[in-house]
Length: 154
Image 1 (cartoon, rainbow, N blue to C red):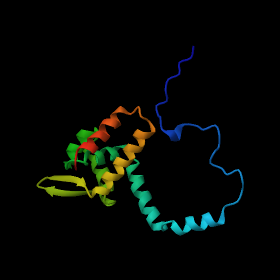
Image 2 (image 1 turned 90 degrees about the vertical axis):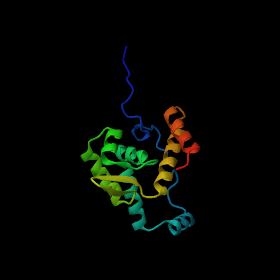
Image 3 (image 1 turned 135 degrees about the vertical axis):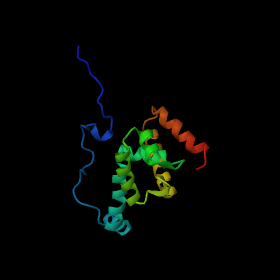
Image 4 (image 1 turned 90 degrees about the horizontal axis):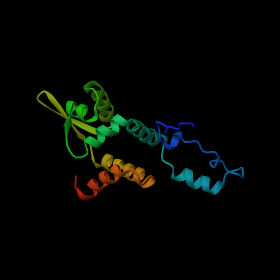
């Protein structure tokens, strides 16, 4: 009997799809649709800036940091304890988030406290969490997290 242990990674990106549904069966593009699509597309500079934000948020430690800052300001040592990482590592993550204007800092004596820079990042994270929850209703933890956002004001 073979033991089939579940994969360590359950990301949809790691799941193989036997059919290739991403390719058109009829070659050639619809000229009118392409024109409309290009007319509505934003500039390359905006695309790069948005991609940088998503790249920064593509790190699980940074997502945990952002989530931890949703409701309260925290210093580097608090964040390190919350996410289970070193202060040095958290500091490097915060530097990246600060450069992208996702968090801001305020020095008080010997401590530096961090908060989210604005409500946009809050909205982005809640939408992402909702998407993950809707895709897999078995995420009971996410249901609880989303209920907190529904019942509390920031």
